[in-house]
Image (tube, rainbow, N blue to C red; front, side, top):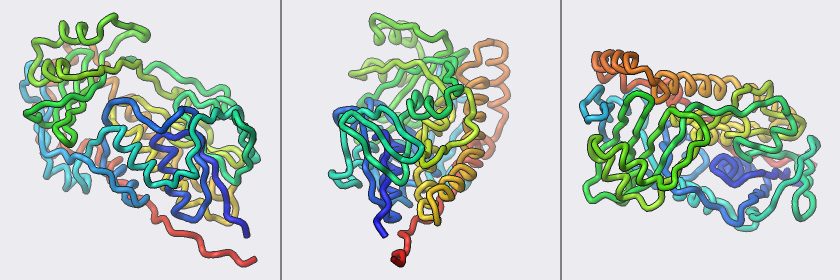
Length: 379
């Protein structure tokens, strides 16, 4: 019997991971990416233990920075809670990891043969029977993986009532090089959260989340941030000053939970299925989980059965994580009432490290299914 063929639409983290997983279980894969090359914006990503396990099951081993300590502080740098790396490992099973997005994309891309990667291809439409129409013609597939992002045209065609909503905050992000590498930290203030995440090679990924209306832009982003945060604790001013390119994006999420992640021979994956706010750092991690689970079911007796199992396993979990991310934003960076912020800080200071370090463990303890090639089918 002919080898099954999957077409993956989208060459981001989830799409490349899905391609790797499907190839590992014996499928032929074609990845269609509309950009002229596989690349990532110049920012970082946290890799929680669940994502690291997914990557290990895929056979991909990127170089990551394991976080060794740090804490939660206020804008002056006064500690609100200690983050204990050893306690984290005991609660979550692995250290918290971090990596430059470009490094992760390159590691995933290099795990795939060049002949299955097609760039500069714009997908026009996808039929539920697996036919993919694109800028150069059409491809027939046994399975189509829609990993085409939060504004997925494929999802919009399948579920036209699904709505993308503003998450309530804008995110400034950058990567800087500092001679003295800081430790992991999260800074809380009214309507603001600032994260500092050390990477490898003296690089530091940082982000600032501000609660504010969508659409605000600045003629000079660096000047705006410098004026606003110059008196905040180190290394925030130094990071802003040392960053070559500062990104600014409004953050959005899928406000309408989908009734299914599949239709016919099409599977939605990653942000196309469950785009969530960034407040738990699980968006990319959940896409990696999706990829492993989809591949683990790919060799069921029929594609329809494989997708039924994928949907049954992934939809409840990812929608629960998405809800938790929205709640985390409401009680974290989007909290603007100063009295409520002060009460939050006072309460947090009373919590022992073993409690604060355990936050997120129910999500990050996830274990991936095993990926094994299918046995050859009898003719």
